[in-house]
Length: 567
Ligand SMILES: Nc1ncnc2c1ncn2[C@@H]1O[C@H](COP(=O)(O)OP(=O)(O)O)[C@@H](O)[C@H]1O
Ligand SMILES: N[C@@H](CC(=O)OP(=O)(O)O)C(=O)O
Image (cartoon, rainbow, N blue to C red; front, side, top):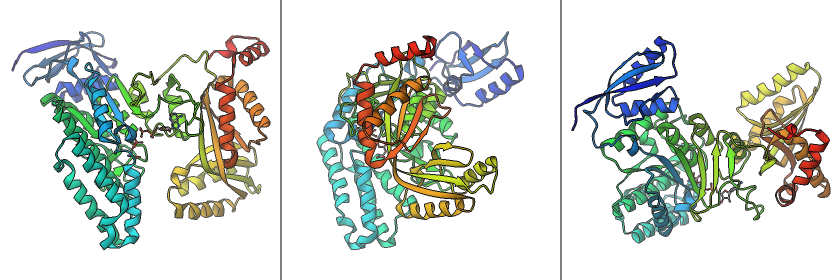
């Protein structure tokens, strides 16, 4: 092992010497420079000028001229690494549909190995529909009695699926035997207690990801590809204690970077990480990030390690122009911005977790959505910016079963007092609002259903909201509504809306509320649930299957300027 020291030109964006000094202090406190380098490259504070590999212990950083300083490092601890060329390069997340069986796991392993230039972190979801089955098993356990818990149909299904998979892949059953045993014990516990709390639900579903990752890592090892399994809750994913919908806390980033980096450098092996899971910071119990949360696990790791790319592998050719279950002729969208993708996810496109774009945007790391069943399809590339000069409508998203409130002031309060009071009621009750339209004396809004997760709560919460609002307003509660969100270039909103209203009128549909906020990418329309799918199909035909250029041309002539069309 070499013990030479090396000097590097070290460029920092901090111009003040005192800021630089305190920044270097933090670098020096890192046990190893590879951690410091990745922290630095993520936050964008510094770059290593000569582009060389920089691992080992930071000895000294001394201020030089301008904002270029000299960094001295030692190779003493440079165990087994060949420099940045051997860093982990990307994160590849495979959803449940991609790892639903032994055959699928084999294909995913082949797919990973077909990118020899990549050194990926792998994030996996539970196999197939395991999460749904586990939740159903938990619900049945509440009322089936302890003696029947072992025979719950969904438990048998989960056991058989996982045992069949290990057998077919030729890995040891012992890899998951303890988890299957513990899962059965847990269901007996639920049966005994006759209750399934949110905390227990999270622990229960965690078995899915814990088993899929163990099986897959064991299979890679069997194929002589060195892999190491990680449970996210032991890896450093620290979250709030909001069971079933936990938020990732900032402390996660350095913790995950340190652990994955440290292990990779001391003993390189492909990390295989459980998606979806975390550890509550107060309770230290297993938490989950909301359904579909493995996307968020992947983008969090991408940001933590400052990786080159985040890939999310699904069962569709990328983000599509609308939900293919509503309209099978939906087509892949080749490029999206983080903002468009976030808006699309937030307004209900199942393909991405609503919060998953945040870490990617903060770390400015491109996200590629690909199809594990059709790897040659180009997929969707999501980046900070894209060419919007030709963009009109990008995608149509539908969120069903939304509750809408029409709130009309009784004029006991002035306008500003009225709005403030209405929103303070929502804040006090912890309910999020999705879409809002206001006039001087009335507000129409929709409630975020993710906060109204459990059936019992819905009615209770709604009753309470209405009761509170009725103290200052006349309230009309409208249920079974849908939000149709048009993600696109809002600079062309007149063109979009002209076409939308033409389509709605031809289909005899009345829009009950419309909102085009400050967001440059989204127009939301509220219609009855019963009319929503028909509207999405008609809008898709109008925007994506007919030639828009004629309309664009008319619009351009009317506005008399080409510039009006360019963002
Ligand atoms: N706009 C959309 N683009 C692509 N897929 C969509 C869209 N809206 C809904 N979906 C659905 O999302 C599914 C993929 O998301 P998900 O099931 O969470 O993937 P995975 O489990 O593989 O991570 C697709 O199979 C498709 O049915
Ligand atoms: N297994 C979890 C987490 C997840 O992200 O799954 P998927 O990637 O299959 O959507 C769920 O079903 O919600």
